[in-house]
Structure formats: C-alpha cells, structure tokens
Image (cartoon, rainbow over all chains, first blue to last red; front, side):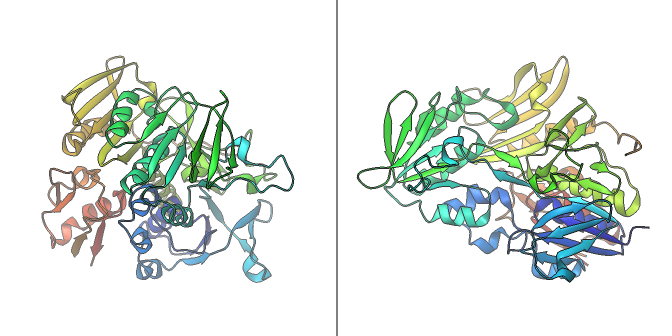
Length: 407
Length: 63
C-alpha cells in the first residue's frame, strides 16, 4: 500500500508529478523536496525573458502559492536530498532537524534535474592563491538574475558554447546593448538534437544582430586582464578581452547524491519507458534517461514539455496504475526574436525536406524523415503550420508499452 | 468552469489546440486565443488536459 510518496526536486518534472498524482486521485501524503529556497519556476524563461529583463522574477513562477496549497503537498523548499537508503526506504536531506531531515517513503520520484557543466579549465586554479575566474553559469533563477545584472549597454560579453543556450544568451545580451562574442569549439552552431543542420541560418541571424560568432575555437583559460575585465585565451595563441564571461557548455544530471545507492548504471540514472528505475523508485526530468521504445536507447529528457509529460506519466502510474505513451520530444528556442520549434526524434533523420515557407526567408517548416517515415519537424517562425503537421506526428505515436517486472 | 489564459507566458506550442480545438486557437504569432472561456462541464476534462500539457503553463482552469 502506497501511503507516502516523496518527490525529490521541485522544478517542472517534480511539480508535474505532484499535480498528476492528485489529479489521478492519490489521497495519501505527498512530500516535495526543493533544493532551492524558491517556489517552482519556469526554467526556459531564464535564458529568454529574465535575461532580456522583460519579466520580473515573479513572472517565472510555475504555480501560484494558492495552487500549491490546494495540492495539499508538504512542500519543503531549501531541503536538498543528500542520500537515499532503499533498505529503510528513506531519503535523507541536508536539513539538520532529525524529524524533518530523514523522510520515509513508500515510493520515491527522483526529479533532481541537472547542473550546468563547468568548463574543465575553469574548475580549478593552477596557482593556489589566484581565485578561479568569474565564469558565469546559467541554470537557476539566481544565476539568471546575476547574469542579467551584468548585461549592460556597451559591455563586452563573451558567451562560451555553441548550443541553443549559448545562442539564446548571446541574443539576450545583444538585445540589451552588450557587445557580444559567441565562441565555441564546435564546427558550427547547433540546435539541440537537430545538430548543425541549421548552423548557417543561426549564423546569419546572429550576424544580422551584431553578434560575432567564432566557432572551432578552443578556449584554454580566462584570466583577469591587466586592464578592466578578463582575457579569454585561445588554444591557437590568440586572446580577446571581455568584461563578462558566460559558459553554456552543457549540463550534467544531478545524480551525484545517488552514489552508492545502487540506482546508477555507469553513473547514469536509467529508467524504463514509464520512469521506473527499481522497485518503488521512479525518475523524471533532466536527472534521468528513459528507455525510448522506438529506438531501444535511453534518451535524456532535455526539455520542459518532456519533463512535464514524464511527471504526468509517473503520477498517473503511481496513483491509478495508468500507462502513458512515451513522450515525443518537443522544444523551442527564441533567438533574436525568431521562434524556433522542434518536435520528434530529430537525431535519427536521414533526410530533411522543406514543407512550407522558404529556404531563404525567416519563415520555414522542415520535415525530418527516416526512410519514408516522418520522424520530426522544425519550424522557424511558423507556429500554426508547425502545430498542424505536429498533429500528424503525434497521431503516429505508438501505444504505451506494457509494464515489465522491475528488480 | 472558467478558463483563463496568460498570453504573456504563452510560447505558441499549440498543445492546447491539439487537445481541444473547440476551446483554444492560435493567432498568427502562434499565441493562444481563448474561444470559449466558460464552456460546459462536459469540456472540463479536455480543458484540464490542455492546461496540464501546456509547456508554458499558460492555462488555468477554475471550477
């Protein structure tokens, strides 16, 4: 009998789990642990509205306080899980008081998300007495507010990382009047699972907005300069000056606290197609990779909608034994005002066709195909055609896979 | 039942239209347009589904 469910992690996936538990009729106790001292917030807005300064921090809230209350959830912000003990079925937090620091569970849902990756050259300082360079990373609302405060007109901003996040940060910084360089060792600019296929489009977009793009450039170090700011030193011996340095070089699942729990496989938290990791243990969101029944591989979640759908899937399974279909990936980006939307298994495509719009215009809809089957869609500034074609993509979604025994 | 949408947080994914095209539409920028703000009780389930699948959580359903 499941009487108490502990959800570890109070962001999108954790909150969605709690909501769907209640929606699907779970009446027992639900404890929601949040590492940050904040109510749940919208992470995609951090690199968009928060950096642009168009939203107050409060607008990033995922739920009103009254909604949280209505869920009758024991929400504990500022309680970071540090250990799980599967024998005694307890989660231990960094909270001192023993009565709140160790929490028993009948089922636990791990939703601890991911942490921003620190560039290898920035993780330590070779000379003991020199502080590590002030590299900004972007993962939390506090990070975003700190960076936003640095995006001042005329300031030199260097963004390291040629993925979506790097492009979004560079775009926001340039919109705020900073002089922006976007640099990375990749051969081009990538768009998540789409890879480099739209690199030229992204380059053109950045060029049109005055962002200098430098790809194939390996950074070796960032040092305080003799004048104001920093010197960014490249492997080819060149250097460039910068007032602000922001690294967006990927994220790592935040699962270090599970070391020794027996839940990790080669350091990764792997779940089946319904989010089950082991008996009474589930995982959702960026902390985990679910088994994709269509490809037989484990896929990281990576995006807000998938995190929500995973939370929903586990919530309904736990509360009502309901099986959900595997979520189809969907993500969006906003770069210099362009709305880019993508859906499907884009990484398995062997061909891409233009469905609508124009190759050379800012409006285009692309169909990704594997063999003669559609496996994904990418739209540039064409939200309505994107949705119409996405309906067809979703209609082909396979039914839920059956539950198999877990260990 | 009352449906409220927050266009300032909408990201134009169109999830709501896929789930309930009798309640929601999109404008040319893709942003949500509410067709029916006070639909009958028989639409509660699809309104709730749209709300829970909105990636921007821009839909509120109040009973």
